[in-house]
Every structure is written in C-alpha cells, then in structure tokens.
Image 1 (spheres, rainbow, N blue to C red):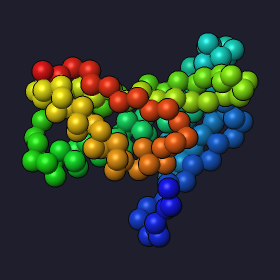
Image 2 (tube, helix red, strand yellow; image 1 turned 90 degrees about the vertical axis):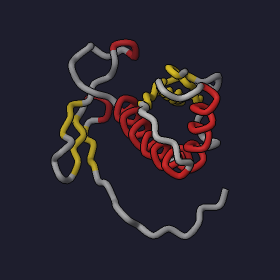
Image 3 (cartoon, rainbow, N blue to C red; image 1 turned 180 degrees about the vertical axis):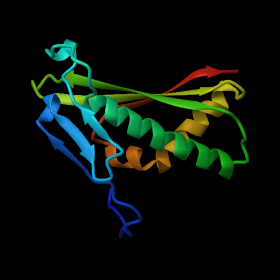
Image 4 (tube, helix red, strand yellow; image 1 turned 120 degrees about the vertical axis):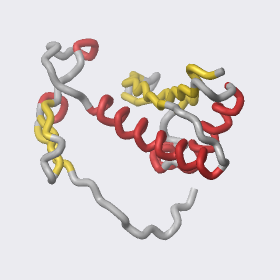
Length: 145
C-alpha cells in the first residue's frame, strides 16, 4: 500500500524511560504512568500499566471513532462500545509479536449489520490502516440483536 501525501493535523508526544519497568509521560503531563511487566511475562505483579494496555486503549478509542463516523455516514444511530484485546505472542521464529481482537457490542443492532459496520470502520480507522498486513486483527461482534 502506498501512503498518500500527508498533512499533519495533530502530533502526540510521549517519552518512555526504563522500558517495561519504567515510566511513560506525555509532553502535556496528562499521561504520567508507571510501566511494569505483567506477571505472566515474568514481572513481579507491581501496580502499573504496560505497552499492550496503552495500545489497546488507543486502538479501541480510534476504532470507536471510526465506527461512529461510518454509522453516521450510513444513517445509523445506535449505542455501541468497542473493546480491544491486545495479546503479546511468541512466534515460531522465536520473535515477539502482538495481535489484536476488536470486539464491538451493539445491543440495538442486528449482528450482520453490526459486523458490516465494523468491517467498514476497519477500512477507514487510522490504527487499522497502520497495522494492516503487519499484525493479525480479528473483528468480532459481541452483544447484538
């Protein structure tokens, strides 16, 4: 895929110090969080977040925005939530990889319409575009009619 010419609209800036056992902070100070390695990955279970949680928060938020935009364009008005499960995996190549499952809950929408809405959003979401072909992404409809 060829990236079109880009016009910057906003740039987020964050600095991480100490990797998975450090701290991450945004330039405006709104994010200032301790990072810890999850116990399942050999961490000590200390309180803190990790890159996978931060990515899940960002992707689910961006994808929800894309679902809302596509719904408006299609004349659909329905409540929904989007959750992201981001998994840290070890590959057959002994390298590490992440995969994501996006779960849409549309309690007032038929399952087939909800799935179509998620598929359409996946085509326009900037996170989906950035990860396409680089990371497995599964789109799943949870609660629906």
